[in-house]
Image (cartoon, rainbow, N blue to C red; front, side, top):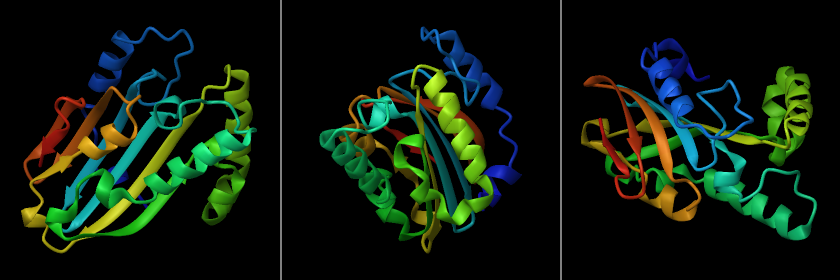
Length: 199
């Protein structure tokens, strides 16, 4: 799993993490891809031949509107709705032009509960520990989404368009992107006003 994203060196990652940290005003910073900053998410993109992999990491606040465990029916419904939207990535990333088919979707978050980690039994203990860690950190929770696509017409896949993602999750104000594709490696920041990146 995650062959391309793990195999390819993200040399720009420390640069983006440093930039995110520079602009971070949140006292409870995490050591993931930069800091846990509301309104900011990160996206790693790797395109190699007809295989496209995306890894999105975001504070739950950006996608769900809260970070505490869902206890009320309204909160549970919001988490379920967000999960359903994240499970349909073709629309979120506007991948129709490359004739892309979703081959793998993996969502991780303390908010989704253990049932979503069935295929990752070896990590269950790690997730429990992570959940406890998040509770002790003032209930800061992240949502991670990993996607693998096979694109029959990858040559026609000129760009990713995150307009729909920004529209569906308006609390997401900017996304720090690392991209490795046919034209090499690049880093950029996408916003609702500038939601597209070219391969």
